[in-house]
Image (cartoon, rainbow, N blue to C red):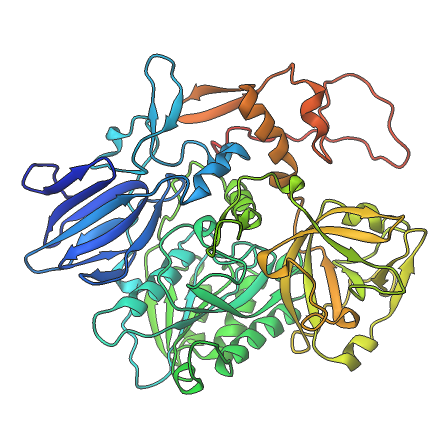
Length: 586
């Protein structure tokens, strides 16, 4: 995993909460878990971020779900770095293992040989020189970023960098490496960089189901589910965002391109609370393109490349020569850098499981721990929701907009319940008045009507923007309220910033949030020991006890079918069995 050698000459200090080591030029060291990295002498590189003596200490997240970052010595002689253990009371991300098996066995944990039980080690990190040193025998691999994927950016002209490639080619890793490198480089570092994430299915700094433009001011040193979100982060701020239907650009290529170009224009003419307009005008713009595939996404990529005219295009594309030739032709306005694919994940979690982990992490962030944002270990369904009125006398929002198409008559309440919704602000009053708003049946929920048999017309990205995401916890027909579990930025619906007459709830950008719906079941079962760890190869599997009592299924929206025949309720479709991997082993 690394070239550092464990010896008395290379270890400066070794205590229960701190490890200080000496690195020679070019040497690398690999750690598993989470830790604070402090450079005592010299300079090192981690995830392409350059840290030197006097640099601000950085929190590094190195779970086994992803390739482990390497700390590399850049000093011509040697460098000294300290790894500081982080208590669970300070960083509560590790506590999310109570809510999902996918969060289990991914940190620095020890194995009791007698009882075969797994528990957190005293230190939150551990140096691993070889994968065989891991007590749990997990698949470990180092994160290797090819140097050709991080070109040097000149300050003389504004740089636009396009990162393109197929799914799982490392676009997020390369984008973060570009951000980290130019925010921390030794010679003329940038104060900030713009980052436009156009991959709606795998957002780095927000939930999926949207595309977003950010102003990033600090290095990003961990997987997507380890970042602080919800507009409270000091590392980045959201410039503008747009909701994208679940199928992405497949349903409407023109709308997706319009949203992407609107984000690009927002970066060109943005303002910030921390930087002056003159400083913003020269900042580079890094664009992570949607996953490249043959067909529609290839055409979208070419259209966007021709529109933004990047000065640098970093391509890890593989495929027919015609696609590669088209990329080279569309990138002819700047330099084309062909880079090898980067394997960012370890393979121990599937893409769906990582998305569920991201979802749980995002919703469990809270400000209940002092002035800083931290992760909460309180069940989401136990938290106080935001009550939003849809009563015609004093509504808190204008209507519900459903993607992609026809709405079953009388089924809007069932469609919305337990679903994720995007909260959108329409910025143009005339545009808002052009929408046809109707009221649905007995519930009286307002919704945007559209022509029968046709797809819902998406919102104009120049006249609307996404302001938050919420989970609909319940709908009361008696009080005409919708209960929403929301992000930190939306703890209340401020009528000044979100005028009710121009606020829409958009449904259809997310699939079923099963990670949230199952978390109470996993939470209670984990305390009662009814999830039994077992061995399957080198990965963990968790089995659900057949005798799980009914009291565990007090969780909303969840039932267990024990195989016995039951009478189908009115309007209920035939059940289809679906297997969920309870162990998160991929």
